Length: 277
Image (cartoon, rainbow, N blue to C red):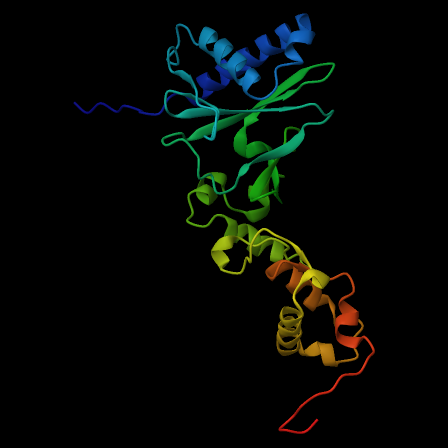
């Protein structure tokens, strides 16, 4: 006799557990708004775990709800398979910055993650959706991160735009590359990315420097490089300084607010060439 066993926990049952959790959260918040308005970040995570654990009694999820939090993703796990990421905001909207697209801190074994979002203002409200269904775009803080929109319409996720499923993208060695390739298609002439994944070998560090704070010798080096890399500097084009400005800021970490003057400012100096001045 061959017995087929499905090792994966029932996702529909977990969704029911989360629906019950959100219902309790909303009910308690309505009854005790002053207490709930103080439940931000980790404090709300603890409350969610307590409610989930209570509602999980008598189900396959009983005694499997665990608060991970800290620097791990997601904040809460169940049966070492499901996860819940908890976010809060004090703003009157359902949009916030999510987690890194690299997911380097993802808890091993967690396959299905849900986003539980609390809008902690009067009136307090909660929403919960599968994680991949509310990721609308990619934004950059100290690293590329997903943007969360709990009201995002079906078919409008970043994965719909990329035409790559979330589970396929997150398992790639470099999930940022398809995103860069996608946005490259929409770049206008003279535009470029201000942030590049460090794996490209092009990033020059975190510090932004002003042109006039750089040593004269270093400025001259940049001028020479610019004239080699961007021959349009010698043309009559109206936009001939655009790529240079982007290059300095993006790859060299240098901001020059008067880039035109660097190459055209008046003045005279002596040049020595083959022993002659």
